Length: 111
Length: 116
Image 1 (cartoon, rainbow over the protein chains, first blue to last red):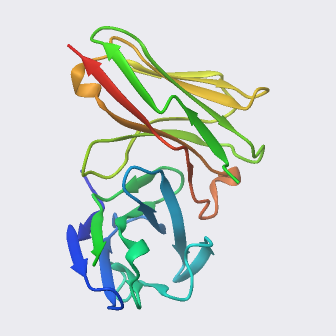
Image 2: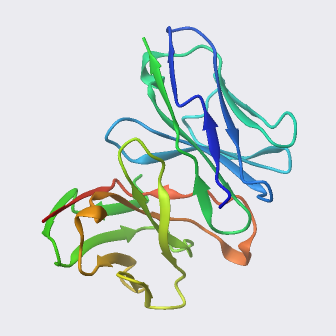
């Protein structure tokens, strides 16, 4: 069964460093998303991506964040200068039309 | 503004019992209401979803009840099993005409524990 895959599963970084989280969405899907989940809290929308551009972004997705789909298969989330409060699980999701499928997540720990 | 409210925060049910989780939404433009199941350390997995043109949808032991006038929907898990122990999230989005990115707004989650 096709699935969304994310790497790495766990990333530890120092405050102020740049991180890139990687995702391979399901191959025939059209819409791509990043969500995050701070430990024990709800899943929050960060950004959606369609037709090689950002469709929508939340207040959380400030200038420190960027997304790319560099080669038609990978979908990346970059955080330019990480803060302690960026520590969370980051989930990539994709959908073709309606149903969104989530990856296993990357646990980002900023120290 | 919390678009989707979910209760209870946690729920303990005996094996074989019925688990009921409730959600309410504000935005009348929402027209797609999925439920996700999440095990520790894993991503949310789509469990079942409903559109507002029906009042109930059943898949196996899982049923969504939908009340459009009250802007409420609920998940019922019949014959609950220890393997159902997980966190359940309701969500909502706008999917009119099945176009557009239409991100999901999640509830705060319900941690379900089914005791043998």
